[in-house]
Length: 250
Image (cartoon, rainbow, N blue to C red):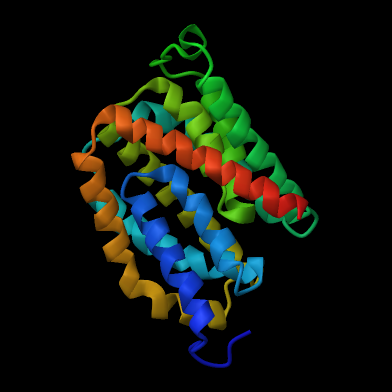
């Protein structure tokens, strides 16, 4: 799409907030990352938006795992990651056969239903702190939807939020999960030609925004009360679900 570095004002009007939002998400506010690719898709095709974001996501992941390396709930990753690997492989094999709008609709509905269930009367949302085998299923869904549309956050949070982890552990576990998932997606993106030279050059242009967003997210996460933190995460997942459903149906 681009013969050189883009100079269009509207491209940067969409791309700069998209990268900063994703960086803040990687700093500890996982649900809001879903807003980034739809925003960037306003100015480039959705497939190129996903390709541009992948190198930036990997750079954010590197900063995130360095910042959150001590608080990871490895027992939960142990059930999530095997499923995620299956989801990534399935996504790579079926990406050309699946309508992206159907994936957006599915992920959006998961996000909305999950939030509505979580906001139901208290006894319906009691904490489930232990590891559960359902993590493998939700890991697979997250791996698949992340591969197709960088939309793995709602399935991941469907499993992890009911565990009622402390904010730093929740943030660290999410950062490590998606760092490993995104690393697994990179070879397939290159082999299929989705991540081409144009997308990589644009990603390099936007890369200086990455540390700003990530460290802003870390700063906010460590200074925000736990109750407010969870309210923001749930609200971000809900809004992201509405956005995905709107995009799918429109």
